[in-house]
Structures are given as structure tokens and as C-alpha cells.
Amino acid sequence: MSSVFEGYERHYCELSANLSKNCTVAASLDGEQKKQKVSEVKTGIDEAEALIRKMDLEARSLQPSIKAGLLAKLREYKSDLNNIKSEVKKIVTGDLNPSARDELLESGMVYTVTASADQRERLMTSTERLNKSGDRIKESRRTMLETEDLGVSILQDLHSQRQSLLHADNTLHGVDDNVSKSKKILSNISRRMNRNKWIITTIVVVLVLVIASIVYFKVSK
Image 1 (cartoon, rainbow, N blue to C red):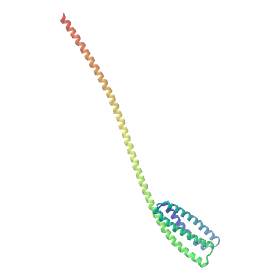
Image 2 (image 1 turned 135 degrees about the horizontal axis):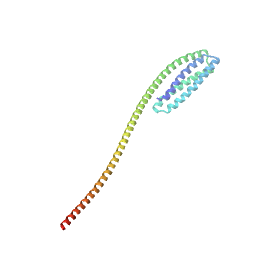
Image 3 (image 1 turned 120 degrees about the vertical axis):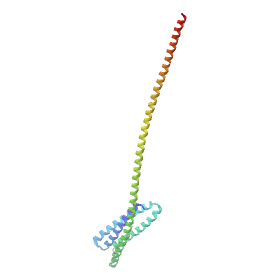
Image 4 (image 1 turned 180 degrees about the horizontal axis):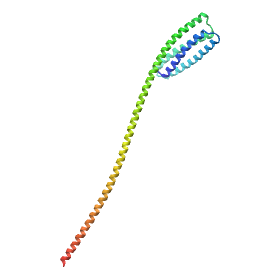
């Protein structure tokens, strides 16, 4: 059941019990006190009608399986409020002889006791439902907090992994730079070795030619 509807229902049950009690009190009064009490009852009736309209709107916005039961309750509440209006009308018009007045007082007291017991039962049921709804909300909130903590933990792990990947990427860039430098050094060494090789070869050829020339001149003499 909707928690909004239950809140309206609890308020209406309390208000209905007070209206029934005030009707009984008004029937026993006279003069200005009676007028004042009747005025209070009429104000309460207006408030009760407003609550019934709110409950009706809330009930019609719910699923059909839930709506049917709530609308049946509303019919009972409307009948209950109509009975109170009838009592107020009789009190205002003054069409009560002493015996009828005593009967109204007696029936009003019985009705008040019966209505109060019924309303207390409804209030207890509504309170129990509200408590269960509150427990469900607390459980949902606890689950949401646990999920939030898990999400934060996952985000922290992802951030840590991202930092590790960035560090590894920087390390790889450093290795690439070192490899590039090593390649350049090896290339320079290779060029120098080739150049030295040609220089040594040239020197050897020159020496061979010089020795051959010396030998030739000696033999020629």
C-alpha cells in the first residue's frame, strides 16, 4: 500500500474519532457553547472531506489490484462521514425531543467507543505497515550505501591501476629512448670501425708499395 495513502488514512481515523466525540458533546450543550462546538465539528468535517479527496486521488494513481481495496475503504469512510453530517444536521435543527436527545447521546457514545476501537485497529494496522515500509526503506538505504562503498572501492582500484599503467607507459617510453640512444651509439661505433678499417687498409697498401719499391731499387742496382 502507498505510504502516502496510509498517512492520510491515519489522519482521517483520528479526525473521525474526534468528530464523533464532539457531536456527542455538542448534543449535550445549549446556547453559545453548542454553536461553538458545532462550528468546530463543521470545520473538522471540511478537513475530513479534503482528506477523503486526497485519499481518492492517491488510490486512483495506484495499480488496479491495490486500487480496488483502497476505494472500498474510501466508501466506508464516506459513509462514516455522512453519518456524522446527519448527526450534526439533527443537532443544528434542534429536532430532538428529550428522549431522542438521550438516545442520540447514548448512541453517540456507543458509536464513539465502537468507532474508536475500529479506528485504533486501523491505526495499528497502518502503523505496522508504516514500520514495515520504514524497515524496507532502511534496508534499501543500507544496500545503497554498501553499493556506494563498493563503487568507491572499485573506482579507487581503477585509479590505482590507471596510475600503474601510466607509470609502466612512462617506463616503456624511457626504455624506448634508451634503445634509440643505444642504436645511435652502435651506429656511430660501426661507422668509426668502418672508417678505421679503410684507414688501416690504406696504410697497409702504402707500406706494401713502399717496401716493394725499395726491394725493386735494390735488386735493380
